[in-house]
Image (cartoon, rainbow, N blue to C red):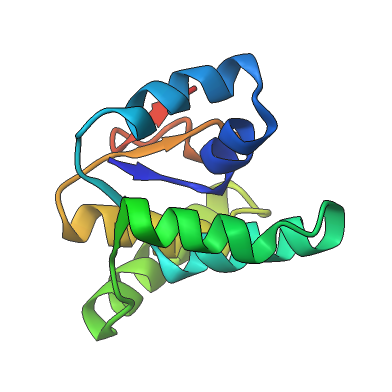
Length: 124
């Protein structure tokens, strides 16, 4: 399972949705992240509570990082181009996260409404 930025922020804020994420983080299941997710969490943490380094370290220790390569980039571009037509605010970052998860044949855990119509997403 790949936990996206939405899931991680819920976890770090200790919300009810974050409690669902905590169950996954606390068990032994293999979790994944993307450099894009780390960048989003780092930026948000830097702007809000200053816990950017601590959170980056925690995520990278708990998750395997799926490196962004040419295949993921091309797949993300295809996902982005197709979905941008239907959803004008669908971002390239979301497409990269989805392509990264697909490259490992895993799902994305999220609450981001941009993912609601993807079979690869598990909504919080």
